[in-house]
Image (tube, rainbow, N blue to C red):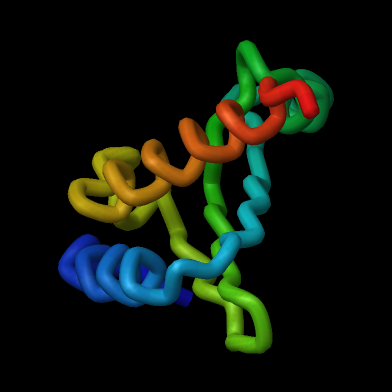
Length: 96
């Protein structure tokens, strides 16, 4: 589990130089004091908070990033992921 923001740049570099696709998964949680509302919030994209970001390159152990500890500012990692998302969107919109 990655809880230090200082580790994110190394992940960004590894993803960038790999040239491989990256698997991404998010886990959310609710923040309400009321347990019933909190449970519903965790699956509501407008009310829940992202807690864990999982990233994995093919055939490697995944990175599990605790965003509650590191914060949402991903620095270089965020920029690398933005580029990958743009490439994915471009490929999906291409018509063959």
